[in-house]
Image (cartoon, rainbow, N blue to C red; front, side, top):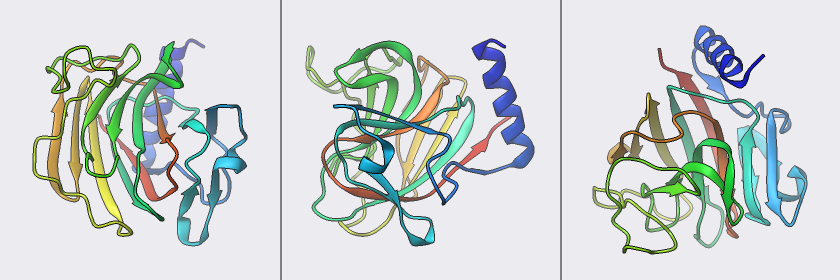
Length: 209
């Protein structure tokens, strides 16, 4: 079975069930950790009561679904469990040349003070112009509305809609960013480790027709 057909079957299966909890609340089956230096999931993440997932933020890398997704609404809630810092949600993780430890993907920034920025990672791209300086190492399209991140320690709710290469990001009910012609337009979903502990909960995906 080729990768495209596998992704279609996964999407159709999810559609029949409606919203899907990406974490099962028991363990990290269905997920894969990629870090430098190499680590196991239990070194970087652990399950807490009430469906909360705690990340140590280390070592540098990302935790990704083993399944590919296309055309969906992703709901993610997170908060800083201590001092705020840097992390992100990775969309459409795909094979290709890495940028340092980061895969080909589209990053939805959750860095404190910059939540809602969009970053094309490695060979990823979108149609809209960047707002970062020409030639900057980190390529960014900044969020467009006033900062809507909650105070440190409170839960933030991020809703991401991805449909046929168009990605829209809403943070705590405020539309923050939109890009088109996203490439790649499908792939795995993941969470970054960038040195700062944080917590996740209510990570759900609703397939779109």
